[in-house]
Length: 344
Image 1 (cartoon, rainbow, N blue to C red):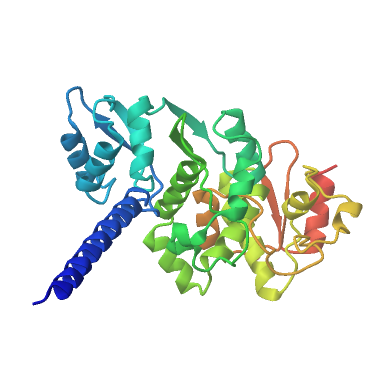
Image 2 (cartoon, rainbow, N blue to C red):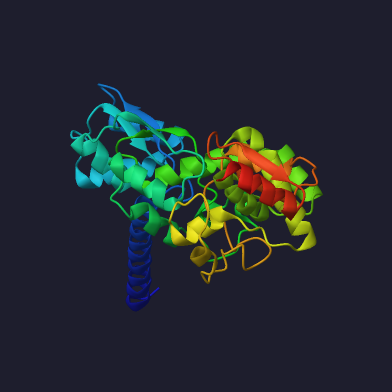
């Protein structure tokens, strides 16, 4: 073999080696800056004990499902010369975080925050949830509303959202309950916990019953959001649901003051004549059928009241001023009598 051929082979080997090195470097950098599981935005506790070395921390991260492999963590620490700067403590981590993000926490000692209880009442709108979270200093006012507008459904992949119209607010699915959040929880953490709760509370039995009735989860949530706002007492929900479902069956407008309040934000118990003239698909006095979407975030009692509504012949109801109990009527004439009796 002559000298030129040897030189060519040597050059090819060097080129291949350089290619492999560069390719490996690019791949390692990609893994370091790529979240292990971008769909899992929940935060879990991760503890670094006093005396834990880099190898042990890396193994624990891998075994806990936070990173793809311990070697990538070790390489990053070695490259940045950070082995002596990782601080012991209890951290709130997520598989959606990158290795570099986690290491930033470990270096500055950003341990998990204190747990805070926050209650989202049944029937709260997205605007009310936003205000409640801002009052608790979890978010800046308006952040929850903006997050709802840009929320990536592909990121969530919850089956209960399969029949929800696209490009539509997720109001109705933010499950009302009392939650524990860390004071440094992200908006993603807050939302995911609400959706996880919805997914848990809407059991397989409830979903099967919805299918048996040839309804969609979205339709149930829309009506439940109205029932939630109309009912002064939980015990009235199934009958109120019955009134609306009886009307839907014959194509009669729902005539819900709760949907009018949703448009006008007036908070009136009874809509005025001017209120009823407002032009909106949520005006259930002008348009029959369900409104385009939920008007609130209903609780499980309202949802069950729609699924397991009481069979009645009622087409009208009103809410008494003194005790907020509902009074039901079969005919309009009977309804007028009840209005004269209870609302004057």
